[in-house]
Image 1: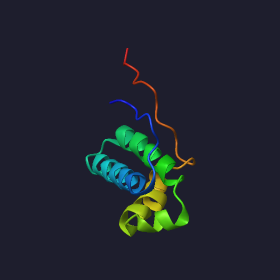
Image 2 (image 1 turned 180 degrees about the vertical axis):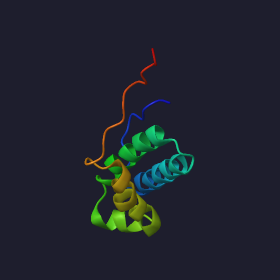
Image 3 (image 1 turned 45 degrees about the vertical axis):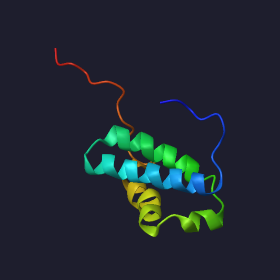
Image 4 (image 1 turned 90 degrees about the vertical axis):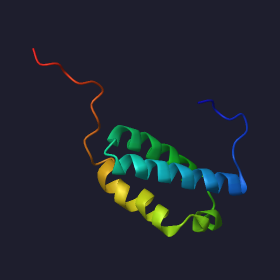
Length: 89
């Protein structure tokens, strides 16, 4: 994937935040925790750039999952993921 040259604004930004949250939820449902963590972080970074009015346009189900439920599993208080698996010698 390539990065966009221009930052998203307005409805395009809201749509992208919703899309990223849905992708993170699909990874969560598929038990792909590392992928879910990365996508959630991207969605949260975009979500934090929204104004209060824009945040209210995000469906409540997605907002709740992003801010509360996923924080329970991916918050700073959790043990960070390991970088590589150790082989048994």
